[in-house]
Amino acid sequence: MEQTFAALGLPEALTRALGAQGIETPTPVQVQAVPRLAAGENLLVQAPTGTGKTLAYLLPLLAKLDASLPQAQAVVLAPTQELSMQIARTAQALAQAAALPVRTLGLIGGANIKRQIEALKKKPQLVVGTTGRLLELAEKGKLKLAAVRLLVLDEFDRLLDDQSGEETAAFVRRLRRDAAGELQYALFSATAAPKACERAAFLGEPARITVAGAAHVPSTIRHYALMTPFREKAERVRRLSRRLGVRRGIVFINRAFDAERTLAKLRYDGVRADALVGAADKQARQKAIADFRHGRTTLLLATDLAARGLDLPEVDTVFNLDLPEDARTYLHRAGRTGRAGREGRVITLADYREAEKLARLTRSLDVELTPLPQGRPQAPSKDKKEKKEKKQYHRR
Image (cartoon, rainbow, N blue to C red; front, top):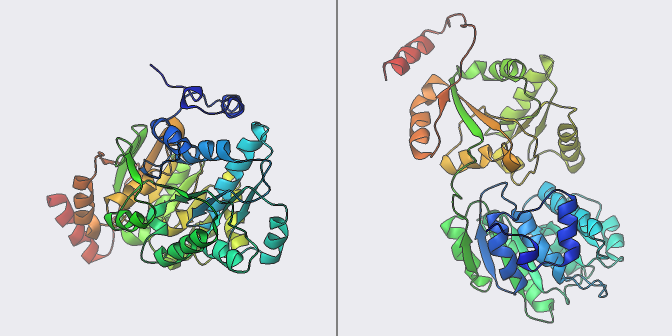
């Protein structure tokens, strides 16, 4: 029997709002998480990218908020500025559609802190943001945490890794010190490294939910491999994006420096492209995402770090200009396309020297990488070493 949002115990206002957006049936992660979060359980949830994790915690969270209490009652931490603001926008839109008189405020590093302090005077009930900025505002006494009862860690594996774990722990210590009542914790991510799960134990030893198939990508995604000399990869992306009619494509590159260099090449050849890299300032990153989202650019170049948590539902193609380091990274990249039942494709460009690594990656993945037709044959390379590598590859 098909589940409904009403059967999950959500208020009628929220179920109506979802229906107005064409969301009639809860996803598996929502079916499992919503009632347990509503009941006050501490949860650690692992579910694939694009399966509705954000709504899985926002729906019970919004149902819990007391609109008559003008204080922060729930906090959502996210590892990146983009993901934080995306969550805040989703919560605001849902509350507005449901006519819930609650206020949401996004607080991220890099933004004007004086304006954020001014916005806090409006007493939001839900605060979403990056850990460093929330901790800074709490230590300044501008973000009051006394009424907070629920803390959500979105992409908790990133928030609890070697780089961010101590800052996250510092915020939790501050929250526990300031909060006047018992705290509930909810941790969500597409991947759950053993170390991150161990570190999550200090958050009340949450019960674990793992959605079946968390290590796989949707069946609507097609996976291709194309052997390409390293120095020709950018040109190949340019040709493929035009030949295949790519409307919105994300190009994954392992290093920010290489992303900037590749961007210059693509733009020189007339491709509408932009780059999303960690070094970019907040305004540049926001503009790159907005231009891509609204179709003003066709290709968005990104490192794995910069693209973490992005929700761009109309991406039709993912290019792996550089091979991902492991199967988990491949699956994360692939999850940028084929969202919400749409079709998508992942094209991995591999140099002949990367053939063995690609073969190992293929063996570890539960996907079939098929050769991508190259169209017209290219002129033979003049590089003797490259010719030798090609022969060795074809003998395998």
